[in-house]
Length: 148
Image 1 (tube, rainbow, N blue to C red):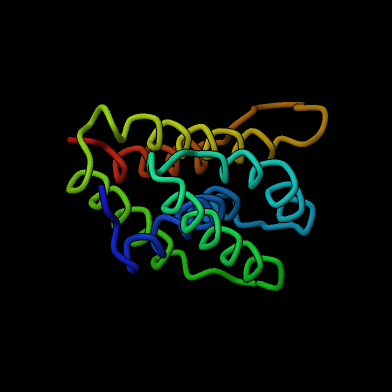
Image 2: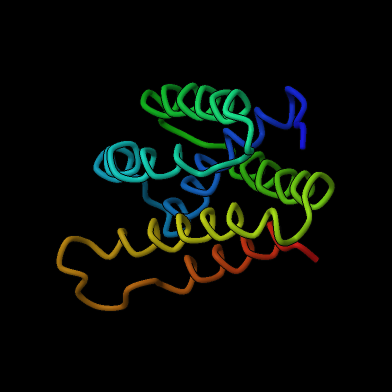
């Protein structure tokens, strides 16, 4: 499986786009949420194997880290652009991989979405874990990434 330069860029931006869609579903994005994303989730996301070729995996990690660096100073997100990125990644996975090959990638991205939503409940997780706007965002992300 070979991704072209544009596809690698989309794949590297997808976790940031998912983070933006979930963290802004409730209308708020705190510095603490950004810090937690960078410190906790990025190390796990960088381990997702996008290819059996170690060189391709390093390209993915490089694009992801470049996206993370841009996230650090970012104050706003174009949510429509974030939706397009997730949709385009779903399309790339459908075209370039079998459903079985892409399943671990899809699952990792959906776990990320759920964990970002869970994190918004705060340290003590009081009250409802994931509010309605976040559940809708997760549903949309799942739909955009679906293997069909």
